[in-house]
Length: 206
Image 1 (cartoon, rainbow, N blue to C red):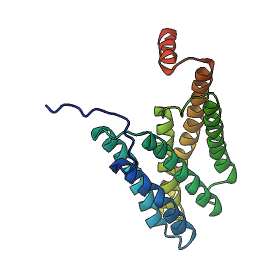
Image 2: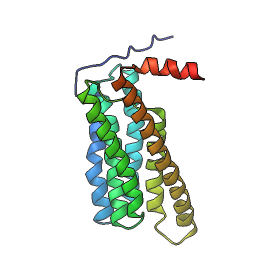
Image 3: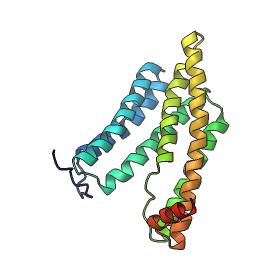
């Protein structure tokens, strides 16, 4: 049996996982042009699907190749946020979703930006990505293509619209739930408790 590859923080920028993340970022303006210019929703959905696949692939490659890096840890959630903001903008402009839903999701990202600035002020780096946050992002990134597909009058469009709104509601709820957890972790860090101590306290309470 092959020995597992050691996961270490590499200082290089042009690693394969990071190149995939840069490619994901390059897809954002392409997506916006497709949905707001020619309104080629089919191609736009393909861009989202490729983005979701590369999001999974770059994490797998980083771990298997031992190329986990500080830049990669920053690029991955940044690309997720950028795609979410781009899709929200497009859906709102085309009046597929109401403005209040877009505002609710954007406000959560404003909260996270404030937490990051506060943590840096106290000498801490960004918080590790929580599973709940990834689950929320997963729901939202599934909701958006389905809402685009729901722009029609046939049975397929109706089913896509219902499923899209279900994912959107669940995703938004989980998005804020994860935000509250991140805020609690930030509060504990600022008070001087490490993530390991927080986990131990949680274990003892249960």
